[in-house]
Amino acid sequence: MPSETNAMNITRPDRPHIASIATDHIVVKMTDVNKWYGGFHVLRDVSLAVTKGERIVLCGPSGSGKTTLIRCINRLEEHQFGEIVVNGARLDGNVKNIDKVRAGVGMVFQGFNLFSHLTVLENCTLAPLWIRKMPEAKANALAMRFLERVRIPEQAHKYPAQLSGGQQQRVAIARALCMDPNILLFDEPTSALDPEMVSEVLDVMVELAESGITMLCVTHEMGFARRVADRIIFMDGGEIVEQAPPQEFFERPKMDRTKLFLSQIVGH
Image (cartoon, rainbow, N blue to C red; front, top):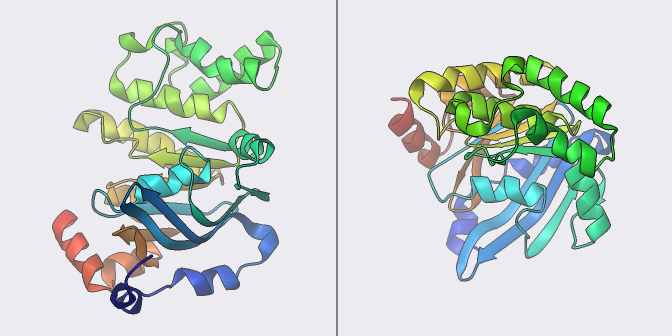
């Protein structure tokens, strides 16, 4: 648990936010979530409510808990204390609930995580075929629709090694969309890309955000955050230090730690 001193110095703007939202609009609710890696306390009393269609950007220094937070949402990481409810299902170790949550939550990883021995089309159809038991023709048509959406349908029969990093990340986005999620999680989706490839991935993410899907994105791309986010959450030391709409976050940050972070990454 956080020390008494830390608890006194950290504001909790997330708690009023949770209380003010109609329950039927909340798709992710985290209440006093704690997680440890051995003796390292990576998430400390994190409470957060995400509403349907909301676009959230999580930022903060390395090791602040951002990636762990979103990985807890689809149970890629198991929290030890507190409550997480996603799409009405409580993540408490119940396997059926975990499967239900993962069916509605897509994730795009920093390192693409594509199967190198499968073509682009096969990577995209694998989950619909095996998890949703979709007929092959329907799965192929679905995959092509999303490959068109991310603007690489001509790459369908190539293997990942034949694609650029930006193209591979767009395949990963298409693959996530093929499971028809209502929530998309992004873990530093552009950090493994060469600078000239970043914009092509961000353009796709902007289009997705405008389509109304709920998004939580861990990123240091502050231009993307300004353009897309409904709310920016700054984390440090495993805690939510500050959260606000983009204009307020960048122009009127309240916490000294947030001000220092902004001065370091955007010359604020």
